[in-house]
Length: 228
Ligand SMILES: C[S@@+](CC[C@H](N)C(=O)[O-])C[C@H]1O[C@@H](n2cnc3c(N)ncnc32)[C@H](O)[C@@H]1O
Image 1 (tube, rainbow, N blue to C red):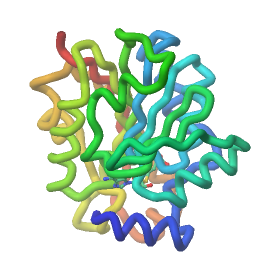
Image 2 (spheres, helix red, strand yellow):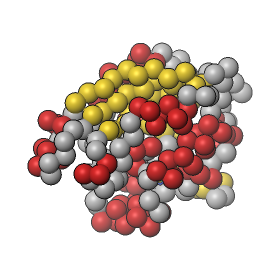
Image 3 (cartoon, helix red, strand yellow):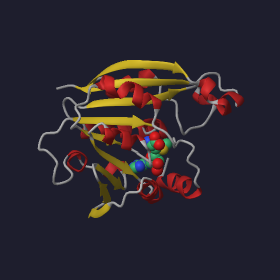
């Protein structure tokens, strides 16, 4: 998906992916990941996800990246926060208590931007990643680039909660795209230990997918730990 696709989605308010509640899979599985409270948690392709507020409530410093200025401004407006704005080309950083959003391209981020922002940043912080509707938002060739970038940003010991969808791709065009377990292994098995924590039939929760005759829709949860 090119940037123009996402800018248009946000401008038109076509954001069916956005949840007006915390993601149930985050609530169910994040505690099991055992990420220390003071860890920095990276949320790639973050939109205006409320999950960032929940992660901050757990004590984490949260850093997101998002292409759309509409998403970034709505995130702060809707959560009654006035961010401090700083330029860090090619991104603009919007920072409020414990949350920083980089407005700009995920593919242009550096590890320093992700893990070392803010004066209070400890030299050695535990690191974690939460991917919901990020990897699955991208078409196949971009997913390989996304994974390569994630590999370059991660550190030994980084933990990641990754939520993907799986369905017969021939029956529906993405996004979201189908990302089955073997693709997750292909992207990350050589750099991280991967545990497959959930494989749920979620078709009954998606009547519009059922109505379109999609044969199955599964939601997977993976826990990754980067090798030391
Ligand atoms: C399907 S949405 C998911 C948003 C969020 N993760 C959530 O759960 O609500 C994907 C988001 O990624 C953003 N995006 C797409 N490509 C991007 C890129 N290269 N860099 C930063 N953000 C990007 C889009 O603008 C969109 O808000």
